Image (cartoon, rainbow, N blue to C red; front, top):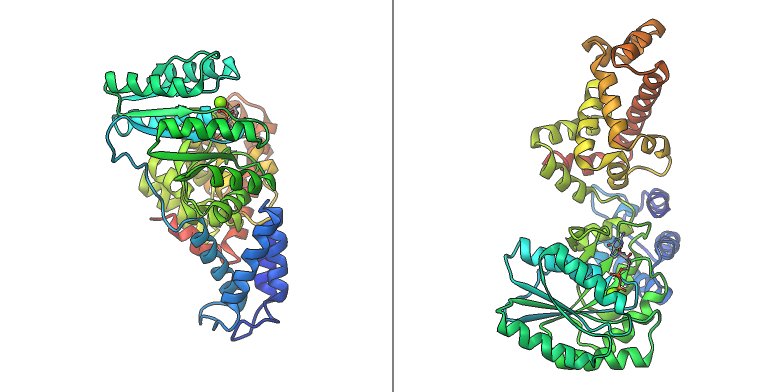
Length: 442
Ligand code: GDP
Ligand code: MG
């Protein structure tokens, strides 16, 4: 994987005072492979690597860094620059109804994203929101928007599949003005592939709607196709931003880079799930870290700070940092936190865990019921046993199991899990992960 490759590349490049054409060659080859693996489109990879080469050659290696780290730093900085440097909130400074327009291929997530934006505008910005669909080709699509509008509390403006999309827009604008709507979201039709009919239609609708923001919605799993669709939409529509959906899936973030490179437009939001609250502001630095495989540490910090008390978070960070003294009482604290945060799997996915650590076993007991049982097991131990799990022998295991109404093998499983966790923390505390973890203490 990418982090592995970069770590490898960074290690192989040591003890040199200056970056040179020859000493970065191998690393750049690794980075190139890594970016391709992360699904960045080939032409984008090429120009990106070229730019890194130009920047890196001749660069003096900072005193506290190895040349490999210096190079990774340059790559990270370039990624952040390319991805937009800073976050851009919704621009609503216009005469209402402020029109927001969503375009993109079928299945990209336009309709879902429209509902997410509506919910955000209603709940956070206290706006009156209306939604309209011009997807006249698929009656089911209009119905889908209607259902979602009801769910998030937005006005739904009806449209018929027999209507001209431009007439629908005119009507929606009138109705929005009449009913003092602050923001009107226009959801459009998409095809599976870019074609002229679709583009002509979407351009015609766009001209009528005169939107304040025009978003290109793209699936983060789009892979190499991202370049082509992004280019066409960017050529035909005056995009103000990109929304990247389904980042909760397996995609490694490469599409973010491809789309930024091709359109030059900022990614504004990311979709992180199917539900209407699963929309987040895009953070270029986090996506850069994700593409580089460092794990979404910053998001994790926010999550921890939001849902768990700060003291606990810094205690956890301290434990992780030291990578030792992680006993069963700490595991219990963590299990309780995980119950608040959507389970072990969600947590593990966000941590910068080295590829050499097998997390499958840890992810096994992810559900809430399982977490509760594990906490119950730890509760029926003595404080001494929590501190020194190794002292728990067969007869104590039976006592503990009967104390919480479970089986000895449940106790064994928990002890095994703790051991793996302890091992993982030790590994993470090596190899330069401490610095990142320290950030978790706030
Ligand atoms: P449209 O054709 O562009 O309007 O796409 P839809 O909004 O209908 O979405 C297509 C599918 O993708 C639906 O099943 C959505 O639930 C799903 N989807 C959209 N956004 C996300 C996301 O951020 N995460 C996940 N997991 N699924 C999403
Ligand atoms: Mg749709």
